[in-house]
Length: 352
Ligand SMILES: NC(=O)c1ccc[n+]([C@@H]2O[C@H](COP(=O)([O-])OP(=O)(O)OC[C@H]3O[C@@H](n4cnc5c(N)ncnc54)[C@H](O)[C@@H]3O)[C@@H](O)[C@H]2O)c1
Ligand SMILES: [Zn+2]
Image (cartoon, rainbow, N blue to C red; front, side, top):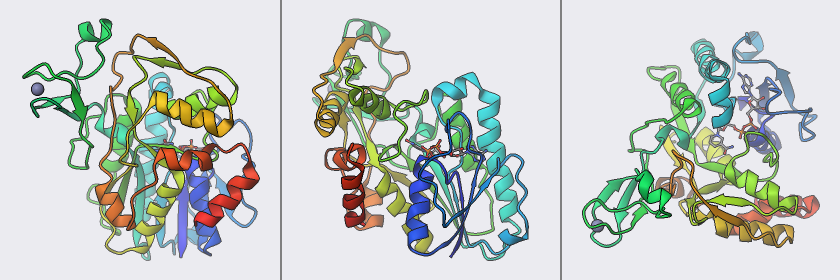
């Protein structure tokens, strides 16, 4: 199949390119090699794949793209911090880049599937919590006075009991809280009314795996924790470190993308997550074991306004689509962060 992969030199895109190249797809990769994401040419680029260094904001496809059969659109400038500092750049790259790509796709007659890689950031704080005592449901909002007093859990408005987070599904309303999330939602909206082929939007929770940049200024919390521990430093955690996060393994993302290309009945919208919450303290212990470093976190209390207490996705539809549950952080962290690359390679090929 002739597949256009945008952002194919990035963390997730490079794994997608590996998988599709290895199964013999005819790959065309566009990546701007953005300096914020790449300080140098990544060492994992393949010799058997054609990379075009181009920014989707300016790229003009030549005739060789007329017979593209599928598009996997991963190109985006990432990071909540970066989007706050450079909103015009991030909105321009992510939204105008997508709008132009969609426009070109209209002229490609063989196109059978457009896969857009979106993000849980589109949900903002739109999680629902449920009281463990009385069962009442409540929004994720927390009272700054409670937070200041070290009461970090979401509290039930009816009985004052502690609430647990309900896994978020695609029926939750997108309500991004900041510019990056807004740009991801705008990417989704660029596909409204697109008639060229069926569209699959994959909303990813936070992804981990080999090639995740641990020392990037825009590193996600899991990348930061792993980066600290790899360097032998103790991670610093806000609140009490019991915040739950749902991290999805990059190979599960790749499996999902591959299936979305191959299956005519692929859904229009799917959350790609593990469905299992891991606390930050647990994550530190797991990653510490992988690196063989005892770096107990320093739990400093305090809080950052706008931080979610817990984030969790509903992996039910993904499990049905994949025909198996996604792997848990506990199970895949060894593969993802193994300092022994040879072992990692053997294990990941064995898992394919
Ligand atoms: N990593 C995560 O945890 C995560 C979570 C949810 C969603 N996503 C989404 O997955 C996709 C890939 O993310 P990643 O983690 O691999 O990031 P990444 O930064 O490693 O890769 C993105 C790639 O896109 C390229 N790029 C950016 N803007 C471009 C443009 N306008 N034109 C051409 N190329 C451009 C960059 O050079 C980079 O190589 C993004 O769309 C991101 O929003 C990532
Ligand atoms: Zn209650």
